[in-house]
Image (cartoon, rainbow, N blue to C red):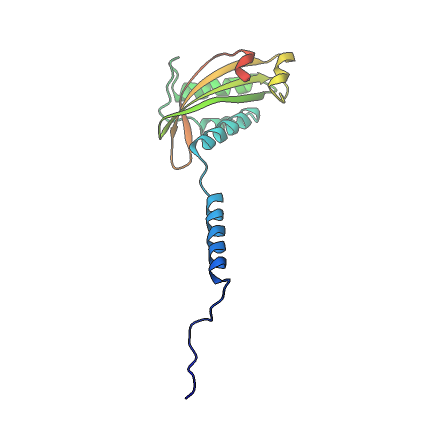
Length: 168
């Protein structure tokens, strides 16, 4: 009687280790493609705001302001847009150096950020350069709200003069 061939693959001692390796690789790749954290999204927003201001791009800056923006100075979104426009027009050369001091999340869709910012007529490489540079120093306290999946907008801002030690 002829032996019947089985449809099952022959036992391979490397089969299960290869499956485990493939699963580990798939999990590692999935981890690499994760969405950025809310803190990373806010840091990215601040970096984009700095770049837009240096490029004198009021349009991009406007897109970062929430429709319901208000602050303790009585500015609403439209008034803040006018302030930004005026500042950009007044500065022939604008270079910003920003240091995010802290970011907190009192609610999942709301964040508070403190940012020290130096505004100068030439590039600022690091905080140490501020000692010998004539720059306007400000500390911004921002309230941000999530707008869409990965987008944050400024709902309120307060600012006051900063000191050099705010940058360290």
